[in-house]
Each structure stands twice: as C-alpha cells, then as structure tokens.
Length: 538
Image 1 (cartoon, rainbow, N blue to C red):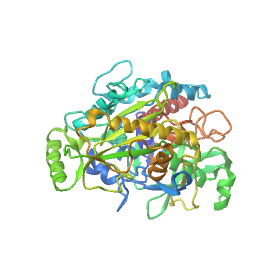
Image 2 (cartoon, one colour; image 1 turned 180 degrees about the vertical axis):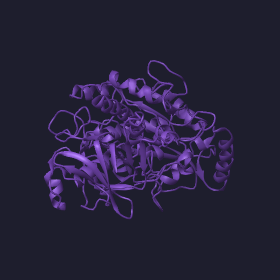
Image 3 (cartoon, rainbow, N blue to C red; image 1 turned 135 degrees about the vertical axis):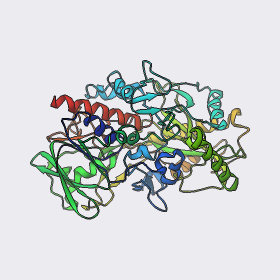
Image 4 (tube, one colour; image 1 turned 180 degrees about the horizontal axis):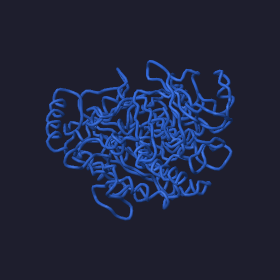
C-alpha cells in the first residue's frame, strides 16, 4: 500500500502527528502501532495503571523493558515500562501535565536548535491544551488534550503541600508557566467533559480516536516495525510484522519515526543507520553513518521514601482497602470525581538543593500509596511514598542492539549515577525530601518509616540506600538528539541528517531532558513537527 506519510509508533507523538497531518484531506497517512487500540478499561480507568505498570505477571499495554546491569545501582537491572498501545506511555503513565522550565527550551535554542526556545514552543503547548481553568497567557482551552485539576485529592496529598511550605518551599498554583519552583497539586491529563469526566485522556483518546474514521487515515495496530525500506539515502517505506508475515507500506513523501527514546534508535540501527561499531557486531551493514544514533540517553534517576499510615483514605492492600476501592469505583462511575480518577502521584514540588542555584534541580512526586520497585513489590495495609528525582542529570547512556532480530528488545544502558554529580544531587534531594515528610503537617498521617531511613544518616549511608533502590522515573530522552553538531541525529526541522524522506518526532530528539515530566513536551514536539511538515509541502 502507498501513503504520503507513514508514522511508526502510535504513542504521544505518533497519535498527535497522525491526527494533525490527516487534517488535510488531500494527503494520506498510515500509522503503525505495535500494540492495541488503547480503548479498554485498563486505559480509561486512571488507577488501572497499577495493573499495567509492573509488567508482571503479564505485559499489559507495556513493553516492560529492562536495562543492562547498572554499575551505579549495585549491578541491578533497571526497569523501563513503556506504553505498547495507541497512546503509548500516555496510556499507562501517571497523567501528570508538566512542561519543564523556560530555561530548558532556551538552552535548546542556544545550542543551535532555532525555533525551539520557550517563547517559540509555548503556542504549541497552548494549541494542544484544553485546560479546565480556561485560557490565559500560558494556557489554552480549545485543544484536544484535556488538562484537569485533581479530581478528588486525598487529605494526605494536601498535607504534603503544606509540609513543603513548613520547610520554606513556597506553594504554587501553576507548574507550567515556565517557572515550576514550588509545591502543589499536579494538573493531569484527565477528561473533564461531562460525558467522560474522570477518565484518562491519553494522547490517543485526545487526538487520534476521535478522527479514526477519516478516509485518509489508516491505523494498523499489532504492527511491529522491523526495518526501514531505503533507496540509497532516501526512506521509501517501512517493513512490519503482523505476527504472521512481514508486510510493506510505501511512503510517497516521508517516514516519521515516533517510537520513543528506545524504539526509534533501534529501528534506525536495524536499518543500517548509526555507528558502524554498534551495527557490525550484529552483521548489519552500515548504510548511513550517523554517530549520534542511540547515544546521549538521559533519564531522571529517582529515589523513593515511604511511610506506613493508619489513615485509610488512600490506596492500600487488604480487605478494608478493597472495599474502599469498590465504593470509590461506584462513585467514579456516577461522577468521575473519586479516588479512582487519582493519578496516585497527586502532589509534588520542585526545589533547589542549593540556594545558590538559579532554578530547581530536583522534583518530587508524592503518591497516595506505597509505590515500591515500580509497584512490583506490594505491601499490606496503607501507606504513602514520595519520589525525588534529579532534573538535569549529567550521566549519559546508550541504546543499542541486543541482536539483529527486530523483535528482540533494545539494549538499554542509562549508565545511572556514572557521573558523581548526579549522586550528590540525589543525596541532597533525598535529605530535603525527608525533611518535608517529617514536617508537622504530615505528623498525624505518619505511622512508621518503611525502608530504614532515619535521622542523622551520613552521606555514605544515604549513598548505600540510593544505590540499593534508585531507578528511573520514566523520562528517557535524547537518543536521536536534535542539533547542528556532529553528534546530532536530526536537524532542528527533525529531519534525519544526511537522509531524505525521514524524520524523527518523539522524546528522543530532545537534546537535553526537560526539568519535569516528558509527556506534555513530547506532544508539543509533535504539534510543531506537524506544522513543519505541512509547511514543507504547501
């Protein structure tokens, strides 16, 4: 089959891009997605993410990747859940709507990525957004992506915000105006329309599902891309497996990779695009040498503190907790405003580990449950936990091939804590987070600490805890970085350097990770990419 555009990957970027490109009835668009349609209850019910996140005992809408053993984490393998479904990771994530800081985008522009500064990208954030609070200079109210206030925040989450103020971290009402310093309840990608109030608003639900019947849009699910079809230095199509046979779709104009920080570089490498030393061991001939493919991996390294509580107005495990969830489920079906619509990570803060810093360097995610080892370790009873992550890590990793088998997972090596500056920031951030959790506002909720963290710990003791339990908070970027230097994979218009008819449009193009969650920025990148493509052909 022939199409004008073939998009590989139906995640946050792919869903957005497919919807925007197919707005023009004169072009044809084909979207390939390795997972399913993303319309079932596991996606629509926000707290069902608890079932999909662990990737165990079965992988539900989840690639459930693992890293290679990490020297900085005592040789442990890290866990990397990624969405395998229309909507991608926006179908299984905590739904937090966070853009990062003005300086993140201005630094991209300063590095040569013209048109990617904060003032230039803000209109694209606004265009996608349907914010429940209405339109203002920083927010949009007419876009497809519903952005809601917390539907029914638990008292412990509000106490966490108060606890931040008690340790001199100011309260803020908006994390998304370019300066996210402060503490507050997160806004989330939840529907707030009467007919779907309280349901997850994944990128597919926002952008793609409403337009699936367009005659010029073809969406093929359960289609695992295996290789790019190339004619010299031009991308002309995509080979994919439907589980029974290898099939080919042909692109008259462009192939756009939207597989994310792991799958996009993997497909390029499988197709012979990348570093020869990364390809040759797997018997893959280098078709186009491009040093940056699969390199420059950045991710937010994260550490969790947790407490048991006698408070039962949260998510726990046990008979009483089950009855609570059942009642909340009935309430959710009626109104959408209940604990079932919770992000789990309801509140958070951005703060500086050193007062001399110009902007926050760590972020917290406060959860109304004990989230231990990505919810793969469960604890009876009730509790709460708080994640703290390093916002601008210095460690750099790689994504390469485990084999030439396109169905094999990529070889992911974040090299967590390989730069000691990340460890020192995380130690300081963990200490300050403990101060928040020990503040008076949370005293009535606290029963006991769970992991042996205590007062007056030395930095050596903190390091031991961190190396034993730290891992990703799910924000991998950078492996097809945008730029003008020799290691850039794509130019600022997201075209693969040295190739024609081929772009990358997802979190992998970020030169550096943003200072916050990555879903909203990824959707922004797709919005901007759509305009670039339209401009090229009009």
